[in-house]
Image 1 (spheres, rainbow, N blue to C red):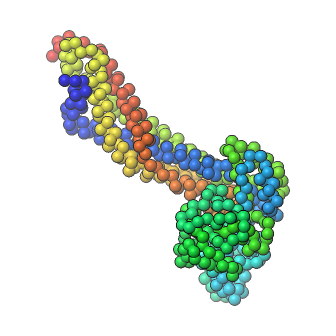
Image 2 (cartoon, rainbow, N blue to C red; image 1 turned 90 degrees about the vertical axis):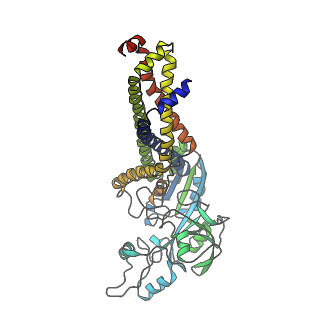
Image 3 (cartoon, helix red, strand yellow; image 1 turned 120 degrees about the vertical axis):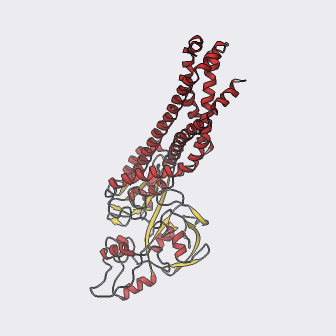
Length: 482
């Protein structure tokens, strides 16, 4: 009988024990593979974060951010200055607007309640607009308790004792100079097309999916802003309900609506490589002037990446621990088998079988058990890896959220361009919070194969120890004992 056939036969000699060993190995291997898949997924997401928004700087007016603060607005001339700085690959200007539903605005006006933006500024957000912008659109998000409370704090409650109309939330409108969101990341257009020439005035617009659904609009439908008719060119998905209660128009169109030609709310500056970000940030701040502009590289992104790095480290440690557990199981099982088969080993050595052949037999037997455990473990990993990765990320980010929730500037991450240090969505992670929740742990064949190869390597090491014990068995002692 060949060594291979004898090894396979020995692996199934005691079927109950074999089943138990395979089950335990499957759990350990499945956990190891799940952790490896999670580690690879998180590593890929970190790379994606750095590649997509890690090289992006946000320029706000000095002393201002989004619809908050003060200072002087940015200009097209400053955008040209920023574009001339070494290592800057692109500069995208934005103009932020807030739109009120025309019907709701008329009802508020009739009730003696003028619509004011945050920070005062009759007729516009923080005084950025000279006229109140109205639209035929209805906000996709209901005001609710928070919306009513916030608007009351902004001075839209009217006189005491006056019955107020139901408030509607404002809609964020952003004029952009390229097909990117306010983090510099490409817009995720789900239907239709982009706006085409972003440097020219246009009556086309991109709507968030929930905003379009709320108003019964689709690609090709029309709506109005300040009695100007706009056509829905495409729909985008920002990943959050608040982010999808928004629309994009071309930068010149937004400046025309605001009656502020050449004025910018923010600039999104993309650097050519991650290594040049720090030096270019300093050069950019110097070129624009510290009294004219604030240049930021989202600390929220750094927090998000740091959180993901922690998850990656935890998953790698768990992978090593699970791998070590599988190796220990193999070691203990093979030591037990060597002790049980002392007589068999003695007979084989008595008839001339070399230690190498006998040891190889035990290694093959261990690999048979590991192969069976790996098949079951891979199936477990394919189903469990996504949940494990999500649990690790959720646990880690919730801990970081508790520690950072109140560090931001009030209103700075309100979802408007320029808020949240260049990451516009709410929460301590800014826009990166969406990316955190979109880590996809896919048990790809390559990752699984890498994990199983590591398991087999540990199994060989675990089986070699008892295999070497066979060299210490003397046939005469075994046969005399029998």
